[in-house]
Image (cartoon, rainbow, N blue to C red):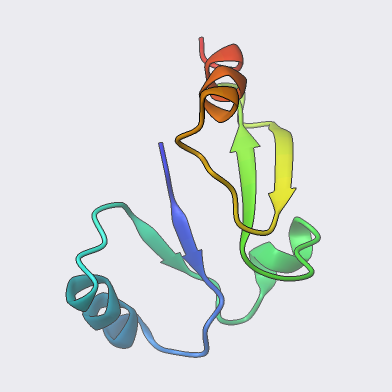
Length: 81
């Protein structure tokens, strides 16, 4: 599952409008107080976390990535149950 997290300073209604305007088709959570960002040590964006079936963070990538590449697909598959 893919979940986006917005760190922007906006309210839920603004986020909903952004998601609709940009036709984003996956869930997006709002973390404008940086609570999750601090918990997971986020220092910049974009950042990606790979979370396994036990809800453990098993990987992290800072910066843009090619998540549709063969190597990324292999990495993700290796953590699927």
